[in-house]
Length: 283
Image (cartoon, rainbow, N blue to C red; front, side, top):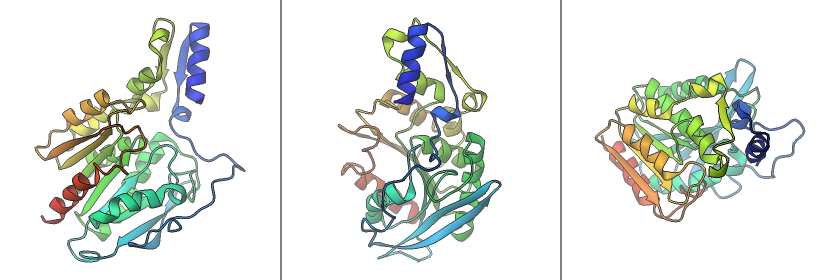
């Protein structure tokens, strides 16, 4: 909503709209009450939860390791999904939703709140989130060498693709509700009738984000999940990211009727996701 108001003001004044990290990263505000709840309250019965912590240069990163119950859990062939959420993701409010979707696939899951979000402290910047993500991957991969899938939704898809580009040990990559870059995202949010009047200008950190470039640097197995009715990161842009993946082992699942945040919970996604996990676990 804030971004739409900025665009409307820029259109009326006939000037450029400045897009910075604050338009993409939305940490908790001081004194702002979060919705009640904690991961596990919503029924993470198929998982055993344990805390995960990493020191940040200006705070502490906190999350959970959710170990899957049932066949394969705790065994040498178990895979771990390192999940990066969108710009509104909070572990305690949204973690059970992730576990419910991935649980049937019998993979362990690690989720860590971004700096300044939920359980974690510190000030989030694009550079800090990318650095934190690499350290999180290194921590998880040390416990399950070569058996970590990185999964990112929306903002998290940029983080996950960056990790996959930088870490050859990534076993598989899942991009959910993804897009190409910040400029395409901003232009997509701009109504067509504003195009003659508004010029989008990105801050330096946002200009350095290129999901097509990151995807082209990852040659491993990949799964791209997209909603056919996603108006935030539309299918045509997600397709460009998919096309940039050089892997021969890639698949794109288009979920009919799903919007930006309704993809992972769709019944159409579960078979594809579990097949992806099973195929990688069998190697």
